[in-house]
Amino acid sequence: MNRRDFLSLAAILAATPALAQSAGEFAGFIESLRASASAAGVSGALFDSVASGLIFDSSLAGKRATQGEFVRPLKTYVDEAASPARATKGRAMAEKFAAPLRQIAAQYGVPAEMIVALWGMESDYGASRGDRDILRSLATLAFLHPDNPVYGQEFVAGLVLLQKGIARDKLRGSWAGAMGDPQFMPSAFLKYARSFSGQGLPDIWSSGPDSLTSIANFLKDSGWRPGLPPLIEARVPQNFDYATLRADFAAFARAGLTALDGGALPRAGEAMLFFPVGAPSPAFLLSENFFVLKAYNFSDSYAFAASVLADRIAGRAVLREKWPSEPQPLNQAEREAIQRGLAARGLYDGKIDGRFGPVTRLAIHALQKQAGVAKADGYPSRAVLELLDKK
Image 1: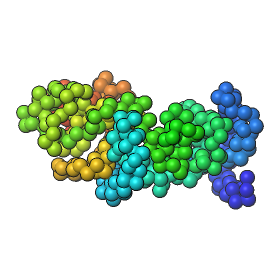
Image 2: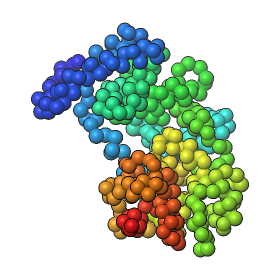
Image 3: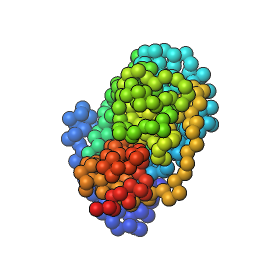
Image 4: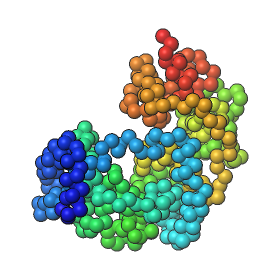
């Protein structure tokens, strides 16, 4: 430990006795991960060299609840994450790497603009990778959240990367342990990272082609279906009965839904009808590839923004319909109250976390149908809270 780190830790511990206890227990916790690391092929010498230099990072307490893609309004998040400026930069990067992108897109069946969009979403094309020691972050998060074994598993996976020859100073990134241009967690690197040349260890820190290949491989292995857009802006007919929000594209076409750009809906595949601010518009059909994007980041807002950014990089018009604003948006407590109310009625069995994904929206749709709501759009509004308050 250098003098600066020692003085910083001493100041923290003097100010917060509870953290002093945590820091004292931290070393013992790290030691408890030795057996898992050994089973994964990490040598004792490597484990010791990393463990001896790790100190508790008190800044990570409570971090799990602050991710913008989960807590910010969808339109606000999309406007920033998929901004025209980011799309312009994405087009420049797509042009710069045009030759390898053509080869990667053909090999993996993923559109070049989608690969580049995820690069932009994750690290702003390499400009914002984060500079935290991810092993310190993962060890601290594992210690702070013993209920979630994933952090400890990722810490061990990071040690495996070192054992395979990745330099220690490469393992820097976000507070959550994501690294490089694609912001891969260590386990994702081990599973999905590929070098463009097919030779040697992938370099997702300084090789654009390696990062793009790794992103494409992630999507392909996660089930990406070639030729299927993840997001289609749709027009819902006035006589739509809202009987279901999930069907195949052919059923939605028979019900009168059309693509807002005038193109034909896909002939095959399932979709979910999504109203970001309530029926009837704007409306979107989310394809199976939308949910593949959620394998990269579980947030619906993230997958939505990535889809919009890809369209903008490709020069396609998006978000044609005006989004009305919610005069009294739900706060976190109210969002959780909706999930509790749905669970109490046997309509929802997910986490009570205030995060509204397809499971919550389908549960809201079921509640609305039971109550005879004409436009059962699955949208979590104050009207839903009122329905739940009724006996």
